Length: 344
Image 1 (tube, rainbow, N blue to C red):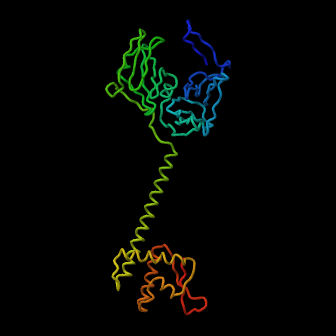
Image 2: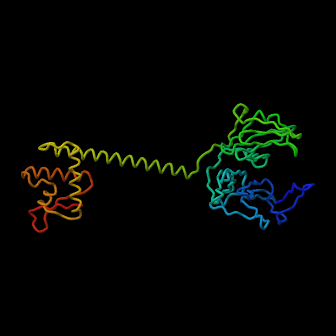
């Protein structure tokens, strides 16, 4: 880590980091998060590095950042880019003498890793471009410079859509050097030549002649599982709701039959009546009551014996059908000639 002081003439350069070397300085991804400098991955000393380190300005040293859930079998960070509080990474995962690419995100606030998907079909050279051919980075884009035999080709990489974008504006731009530059700001692309003259164009479909998606954007396995769980819950709710609707409809039909003969009650009054009887019986839940007490609660004790028997049977059947209470008839323990009603 070096500090350049532009207030001096000539510009002064001072080495900040105390270590002689760290070994993995090549092809690493440097980024700034909340005014602190981070480094992701890197190569060197015949090896690769798959971790995240942060520069501490107090001690002038690099320190390893512990990431919860980060794959232990990750052997390399091929590319990394910052979007808000998340660092998107493309990892190489080693498993049983084979390697595969995985796309995931590191939440820098909680320092946790979430694997999004395995990249089945992706060109290695496409990943290499994002890692090592960046000449400018903005919050939304990378500008990649591909050096050809006699000139340079430029691509925009969209961090959100994972698309490589070719534009007519950058098609004729020569290879940049220390005096020239290409860069993006908001929705505009800029080219500054070695004389300091600036040309620009708005990034729109008018200047885009080719798009190539690096890989399809896809949600993580976590949201997928949640989606299936929610689907099952909704389906279960519909089944239970349908069953309750059918049961209620059946109960209402039974109540209508109960009051159809010998009563002037309409259907809504019938449902209200059964609900009222359930409320009265609720205070006797867990007990057994004799037939005369049951008839008084059901408000039928003053009617003719045949009517009492018919309505008592129909009311109990309707209450049991609704499922709020369960009423069963049993022989009396003291006198088997009489019945008792157990309310549960």
